[in-house]
Structure formats: C-alpha cells, structure tokens
Length: 426
Image (cartoon, rainbow, N blue to C red; front, side, top):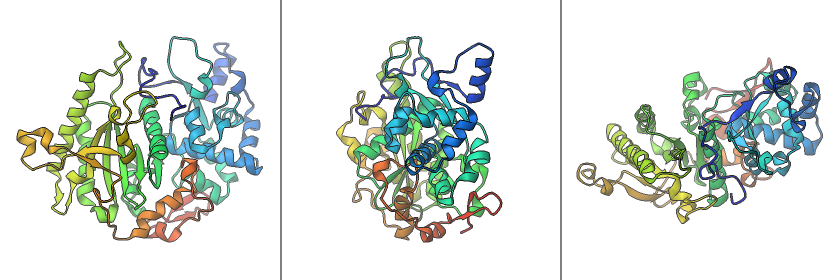
C-alpha cells in the first residue's frame, strides 16, 4: 500500500471517473490511419501473443494464468495492483511480456489516467488494464487450458467484460488489497465472484443473468466464513435507495446462519475538481444520505428479533480508514464501521444515538454460528486456487473442497462440448 498509487487521494480523477482506453483492434486502426503510434512495449503480432499465452513453460504459465485470473476477477486495475495481487513484479514493468501478449491478442484493453500534464517516469506502473470486449478468451485461449487452469482463471464463472466506472473499480481493487495486507482475514474476492447468487449460495437452476448482474464490489471473508459484501458508494443518486433496499431485502430473506452474509457500504465521493481535495461538506452530505437510507431500509425490512437486518448493515467513509494518501487509521485493522443498532426511538429524536460503532472482524461483537460450518469456510481454501486471490492469502497445495461446493450448489463440471466449467445443480 505504501508503494502504490493512491486512487482516492492522488488527484488522478480531475477529468472525470474514467480513464482513456484503447483496444488492440482500435490501436491498429489508429496506427494504420497515421493518427497514432502503438508504443514499442505494446507492439506485437497477434499470433505471437497467442503463442506466448498458450506456452506450457511452468514459470511463464504461472504468470500468464495469474494475470488473466486477476484481471478477470477484479475487472479494472493498475499494473502495480496487478503485480501486487499476483506477486509477479514483472507485470508492472514497462516491457511486460504478459501485457504485450494479452493486449496484442485482444484479451485486455490498456488505458491511462486522463491528465493534461506529461506522464511521469513511473507512469508504466499506473497503466490501466481491463478485460476487452472480445471473444478471444473463449475462442482461442480457453480450449488450450486444462480444467484446473480454467478454474484458476474464471472460478467456474464465464469470462466476460462487464465493468463499472474506472474510479469505482480501482477503489474496490485497492480496498481488497489493503484489507488483505492489513487485516486478519481468510480471503478477499473481487466483483466477478461477489454476485448475489454466489453470496447466497443459490442452486444453479435459480441463477439467471439478472441475478448474476447484481453483485457487491468485493467480498471480505472472515476466518469463520462470514462474508462481508462491500458496496463502494460514490454518490447519493436516485438509485441509492433501490440498491440499499435490494440488500436489506436479501438479508431479511436469508438468515445469517444460512447465508453468512452482512453488507458494508464504503462511502467515497469524488474530489472537488477545482481544488483537488475532498470537501468536508460534500463528503458529509453523501455519508449522511447513506446513513439515512440504510436506517430507513433496515426499518422497512427489519428481519427477525434474533436476526436483525440493522445488525447486518454497516457504513463507513473512506477517509475514516484512510485519512491521507498511503495512510491507514487504526480502525481499519478491525474494520471498524457503524450500524443502526441503537434504541428504536433514536432515529426520530437522536440520529447520532442510532448509529453504534462495531468491529466487523470481531467474532464476539459480530458473532456467527453457521448451520453448516464446512460450507462457509471452504471458500478460503478454494480461493487459494484462483489467480485473482492476493498471493499471500493462497494456501500452498490447496485442494478444492468439492463436497462443500456441491452442498452450496456450486459444484463444477466440464461442459462436454467445449470443456468449459459449468455449475451443477445443487
């Protein structure tokens, strides 16, 4: 964390919440038209790139699979975030062979932050990478992967290029990395594996494109298997109430003992473009709105007296955990946040009394007794097999717990036609 770009504080979003991107196909057309020149470190033949990504040399193969797995799971990241997750520093180098191959084949797009100033000497570490909107992975890479390799890249979920605003995704990736670095957790999962159907362990027959589209931005898994679904919230727009209500409704319908699920809203409004600093008033207004909507939603969907929705929804502001660039407050180690669990009358007379501080990693403060412990804890060992899991959280020699996968309705089998992993029914 101390060595990486800070996507919240370092002023990289003055021109908006998105970077400037190019795909390999667009880059070639721009180059052929004489409009732009492909830089030497991205210049390569498509066939050479495919050969590099398909090569079976063990050391290189590990880099290839880890890079693809991380980009697939976290959606958008800087080169140094990619290197931090995978443990391969070469992925953040200027002349990364992996990046050249993945870009030239059309598997990933490459981008950069929009700034009118000349790029600094370390700009190659801050290059942006995301899955490209192409079918190259399914058509030309997946058929040459073993089942184990395919699962390590995709987690058994189809490869796709869905994504949100770049600022949103980079903050989620950075938060996942920081929690993995600073906290005692079992694992962290990116947006791709934080869909509501997976979090609620829905049987395969209940999974639809709509349910797969609803997801948290990342998931933090405690050592006892409790899942903390994290929502990055940058603005108090008209969709905020609907999003919070959807989570409250899901929590009310799925008891903690069965789902192991709680939700954390991390409020991180963008900086003021004119001053390049976060305005206290602006931040406070978004935080206050989120607090108000979460409290109201917990009243609309209260749950049961022994399993209150209010106790399973928490809020914190980015600055509370990270008050300055590359700086962490003490509260981040225990994931200290606040939740609307105060006296029932507090929401009317004393809003401040309604919100109580809580350590989300404290097993005595947020207890969790799962109905089937194996089903809840197996995710940490299984995540060890994924290229998108921060490398220090992977357990050497981990073997997938297929029994737990089947118990949760998430068993994996091979599609007889194309070899792609598919979910079994429960």
